[in-house]
Length: 309
Ligand code: GLU
Ligand code: ZN
Image (cartoon, rainbow, N blue to C red):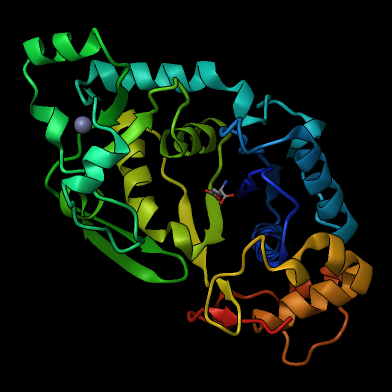
């Protein structure tokens, strides 16, 4: 059974970019007769709010995107809110610890910036591994004054996978990703660990999401391998960008679901998303059933998609 998922962060109302990812993930899964799961990624307790999660469900249902498990609907893999899944992340963290892959990092963000580490292709900072080489003694001394974050040690090795849409992806793990954080100093688990744990335990077989996570996929696959879980297929989507070339974001008010719902009927918005993704060649209202028949990865462009709202 194909199992896809949508994993939004409830840090605000969804915008066109979020709903576009949801529609394409839903179409990819449903066109294969698969099950679709809704997981709420509210790890960042400061930025996420339950009201936004409720609003996400309402926006998905308004468009007709139904799900089999997850969110407030529950299911056999409950809970579907990352904020309630610490025990699962802790268990996976213990497994990585037993494999001697983890070490405490005492660096502040300022330390890391000052070490002028190179940037990876997605703009994130590559950690230079400073704390990997601390002696036990140095660690003891630092531990008495500071709570560290926990990093995973990444080998100097090639990583490659075949993306369902963008084809073969390669990188050198050490050079392009570096040792990354799996648990923050405040105790919160990092997204990379949480997303792998959840997709693995929820039996997800295909991941469809924006290509901003293409590079992070190497880190996630590394964790899958260490934990001996089956690796799902990954198919990344081109991003929606504004006429200025910037990625569509929450500040682009015209793309906010609240505004879009006032301006369009569900089938009109689906038609717009379908047209933007080249699934149909004229912008016209379309039902999800019709659109499922039109869906094909081969129609979706590789370049980012400019939308003039
Ligand atoms: N929660 C992530 C986001 O909102 C998506 C993670 C994923 O799809 O793997 O961008
Ligand atoms: Zn460090």
